[in-house]
Length: 334
Ligand SMILES: NC(=O)c1ccc[n+]([C@@H]2O[C@H](COP(=O)([O-])OP(=O)(O)OC[C@H]3O[C@@H](n4cnc5c(N)ncnc54)[C@H](OP(=O)(O)O)[C@@H]3O)[C@@H](O)[C@H]2O)c1
Image 1 (cartoon, protein in one colour):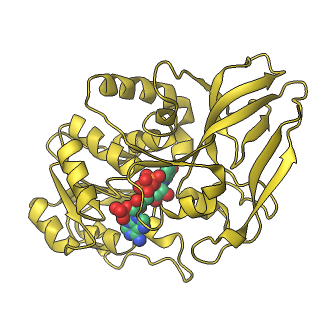
Image 2 (tube, rainbow, N blue to C red):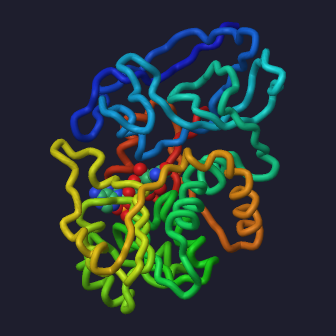
């Protein structure tokens, strides 16, 4: 029986928050793999803040998704047909498969995973791209030393929650900034951060002063905007700011709000550096192995926020920008 593929194509470049009308939900029959290709049935699709950047018509680290193209997304699935010698039917894999039920691929950038070792969602979360971002962003760019104070924003999210836990493993004092009492409780009670700041109800600058009396040695920035500016005022001498993301700015209709307080870099001999996880692909196996030992020792936990149904994609994606997710957001396909 011919299989049917449902997929989301980009219909228009969104202004502000993407709307359902910015997408086309389309249906087609599934093709057969050609020589060298494999067919993957998607089981989970990763929803990431970067997706909002990928649909802007702007120069970035990868070309924008074109109008009429399948929306780009990482995913995990199972091989259902293969004419590629590296993959057999029944193999579980991750890769950039798009927002769709079935993907035909030549196998480039596709990695085998083992659901007997870890549940599939973990391969898109702590042991996947967000976990790698946290590991390399913190350790390579942030360079934390034992006893230093590390502050991370979007601290209950996919990247932030792992950053904070790795900083604890490295014997740092860790303060997370997150939106709402429940997220703050989660990072302190369950992820053993030393303190949390609820940016929705507290004065961030005052709370940073209270929880980081010697200043911030590392600030891992996931949000940009006002919180980055406030963190800049509280730097310790020689501080490192990791520019990982700026989710508060991604749906802006005006220009990105840049930091006013950047002269703090000068007075504190501090650095601010961007990092991109794709630069570390060759070192993922090394990081994954170390993180797996931390997970086995109970030192590294992750939460996945899983929403069922491909058809919910346009609304589920917005959870990231409305602060409605805790942990790694993803879709589960039937
Ligand atoms: N550089 C890289 O290679 C790389 C790779 C992956 C991700 N990233 C970046 O890392 C950041 C986190 O990504 P993630 O996948 O871990 O997402 P996430 O933290 O799981 O989800 C996004 C979170 O951002 C917070 N947020 C949303 N709007 C906000 C606003 N206006 N002000 C402050 N916080 C806001 C929300 O948490 P609250 O409830 O706390 O507001 C929301 O839950 C993003 O900026 C992303 O682009 C970068």
